[in-house]
Length: 373
Length: 105
Image (spheres, rainbow over the protein chains, first blue to last red):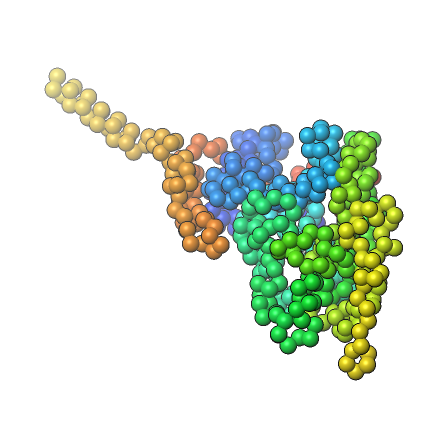
């Protein structure tokens, strides 16, 4: 998605002024700034660009419920980041750790206006549509603007050689067609990561006819109970990231470096078994975190790094009925390359990944298939 | 004497009438200031999410515009709707991204 020209980012459409009830409030009521001058710098003195960052004082003046829910919203508070760093020993009472977190992690924070008025900063920012407030904006500009390489590109088939999700290709489904629960976007009171969200969508919400006697050979009780749907139905590789390091440059500006990403497909043991995710076998994706993530700021700021695997539970969005690994039984059985084995994991991360690594003897053995394949 | 008294009475009546017509209600009496309980809600909205009634919202916003002491936004609007002027004066904020940043975020 090409970034907007700088003037386009701040151009207010007549349609907003004429038809959007928010225009009646006036600019200064929300954004501050100085009236009575047409000098740019003087007019912008004291102006707040992102007023959605304080929902209680702005959006919440009318949208009371949403503003209250936003107090615990996962997109605003990044509870997933905090949960994972805390579990790796990150001390959010340590000013040094908080400084590192604030400099490098909070850029992914999204408040009300980031989804309903503006493009995310990852796309260069700017107004979505001339300051019109969108209840549901273009998913490629909002949801996909942030969840791009690891969700939207899977979904649309943007990775070379990997087909799109059938949900997109055949049905044209948008994010909200599955992620339907309005509360999920505005209330993150479950804490933790998105996988702890009790309202998160599941495949069987729509595919309720999937069961052991549904006529599909591989849908026997053993497979259905032990494998996440994506294990069989993700249509190919998805992106894994590696080696994120952070620091401040000579001007004091925060920077990060990452190693080149890789397209991977790895089946492993479930790192987060729960009632909602009871399967033994799931797909895993390498997260960019590493022991030295915050080494610039101090030594051993993640003393419990090995408490969590670096190969984490993932839900690729390139789902199709027939996939390379489910064409036949032996497309998966005996296919060592599909499984996360010790040799796939760098030595310094093997301790962290011990719970998800598949031992050679655990890889399902080839079976005799009908037709002799 | 009678004429003067009548004029005084007339003046008082005019002032009173003007006061009734022009003086705004106190801030605490406005719908927004009275809080969410005064806003119509739709309790049976999808997913049990109580949402603000759009009609009530529109009325409230109009009320706010009419009654709040908000400074005029005319200058803001004049500039931010003027493509030609924006092309002349709009500029990217000072670069806050380090040149040392590399790789996918």
